[in-house]
Image 1 (cartoon, helix red, strand yellow):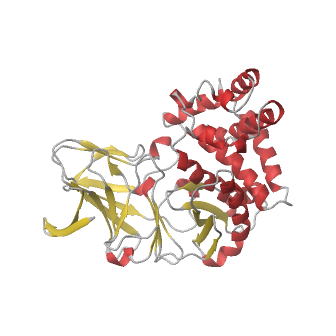
Image 2 (cartoon, helix red, strand yellow):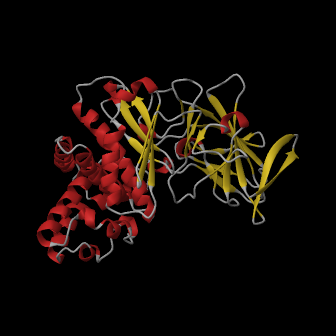
Image 3 (cartoon, helix red, strand yellow):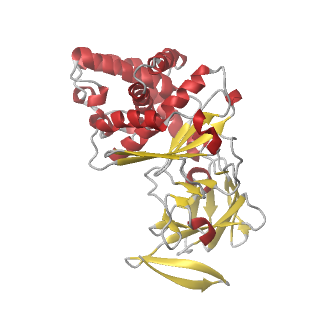
Length: 419
């Protein structure tokens, strides 16, 4: 990569060239005197046509925009934060917006918010909520950090202070600035790093050694050619919330823990399974995107199994599986119909993927063991490489590829996917 420093409009901007193609560079800076307010700006390489500045993920209705006051050449951009999209008119050259960081212990990890961690000097930046990107732009796209931020980041910034933004078909960028791992483990096939918002709360999260055991089982299912790294950011939630969540980024996995003791045993138990659920998302990402119903439900199902392998003498995994299977009746709508709703921005029945979806894979696994060949865990590549059709429908030969008799597959499809 070649780069030169140029002066434009009285300010400095990095201009990059890769094989003669100018990159699009999003510059992140901190507002002086406001440690928890950041700004992002980007110069358009070709301002001749209108385009859109858009957040990915907001359209699902599961995360909310943190973009404030988006302007271009000093004029407000028209759009809706609720939809995470703003119209960029022709002739617009320089776009900028603000990000007000949330405070520690305020969010479900699934909300994927940019926050300031406990020390006040370290931050989590989320592309999902805070870094909208131009839809028509030159590639590659880069995030440029100021020197005081770029010295301690995960993933690590390049010497010039840049971090490549992932392709929009891949998991979003989650970026830690100023945080250090509190625990590290590694084997020949798996490495694990723990980051946490409040280091003194490390005893409130699953031990890194138990997580290593579950991850070893998960990765052994696919036997990757290279060692896989799983980097967790533990974010505390109030026990009164009664719920925990997670999110998968390209290099970091966000997972919740409860900051205080609770009588809500379900939330505490799910905390122990969440590292494996998010790890399954990371593993499945090696095979390309799948529809949300298949992605979320299988990650939940395998995550619960991995918890059992991490703690073989603990019944928690089995009890959680029973709980989520029993909750499937709350969603009479088929998983394909829920998928259609989600595709149109309605996430009101998203929980069906974690309940009815888990019940679906448990039923598939049972049928495979009775009438088929192997189990769900022995057919993961078939599931993750299937060519799903309109609205997330599996291919017509899906049941056959799983080794199921046609009558078994028709019954499962009618009970869980259709309707």
